[in-house]
Length: 593
Ligand SMILES: [Zn+2]
Image 1 (cartoon, helix red, strand yellow):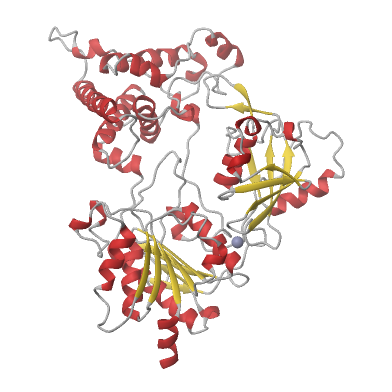
Image 2 (cartoon, helix red, strand yellow):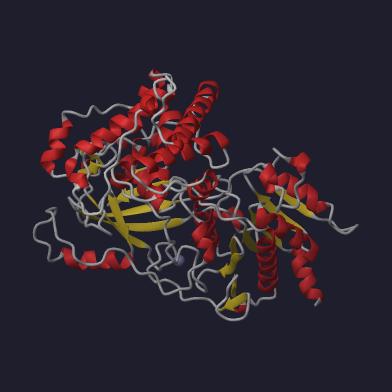
């Protein structure tokens, strides 16, 4: 096996990520005899990493993960061995990490903790035709698999389950579970102390579909829509004023929407009054013990957050931020009390709000060992024999580690299909703006096409979009002027039946987009709060054939077919569960991998 030793020593390996799995992996690679590594990680070391990222110690807190990881593993190398580690503290999204750059490596090993970076590396690896070993852990479970163009499914072949989200009107009007109040409290924290975000509105929603139109219209004149952030600042975040606004006036507004409370089994909320609870300072408090306790917690949490907001500027919600957590626990429990929902302990609120999955050093170590073995197997020219390996706590078989051969590729995958194609259904002229208290019509602009569709949904980094050979959206910053970006799709000639080509030069990724104009999107799961819907290749093909018979192009059409493509049957990867968009309602722990 001398030749294998030489192969290992001579090949260049790229490791993306130097966190939980990355640290273990770098150590394994060096001890296995790899001599030429490049490691990229943007992060700095946090004290919370030290319990499982063993290349880091207390004195390294605040320093670059990739640089310290390099320093630490070099101490493990045998004397006389010339090891080269190119450690970079930067983002894998930088343009310099292009497909030609990736081609210098024999294998790419991902040790990442987020879906957008995984998608990006997946595309780079496919375009460069370099084997990629994926990995991830969640608590005691983990996965590792090899991705190779034309041979295996790619990372994006299977659709990832989304984190559970809740309809805005349930959060704002009719909560019935503790989690609804916790999500509302997180929104409230951001509204009061963070950057203003219309999508995290907390006031009663008069556009609730449960309200008859008449009632919504009646109320329209009565409820004054105010900007919560500005209003709170003007009132100097006074805990009493804030309390009476959110737990008295807003609750009374909800009670005035009588239609909301006609539904059988739904409990009416009871408004609270700050002075009544504490007894106007005359010592005769009328609030229950629980109300007094939560009010005191509210007072302290608002005061503490206000001090920080004034000192540090806008705050962002973080489950590890004690002030933010105390605020969310207090506000959620007050709201739970108002809606007669079971209240939760601060720890439980933290667990629910942070969606915490523990990071286990042992699981990382097992998966990192498998990643290293996958790399050796690839160098032995046995890539076809590599397996998808799962680490399971309660396996169906009696093996904790289960291995399976490559799953089927998804022929409709938007990334690795022969000709990646999607259909986008949207109102190319106007859409409902669901963020406001009353439904308003808002334009869907080129900026939305770029940011919401190409970047967020299709994971492109710097998209160019063409229609009939003309560029309608350029990746060149100089071409992105505000006037152009503010145009609606119809204003740049995009309508029902338009075929667009979206391309990302860095990823060497090209995608055909079929546009289907609808004035109203079909409901899914009883909800219809989306601006657009994207479906895969099968839908695109159906659209093309149906267009020939389409008589009234652009008219509202009934769509009874199932929306969305069905990915090829595939064992759902545990690591997919970790990958949550940054702005999902429930955030995830970034310390999983
Ligand atoms: Zn794929």
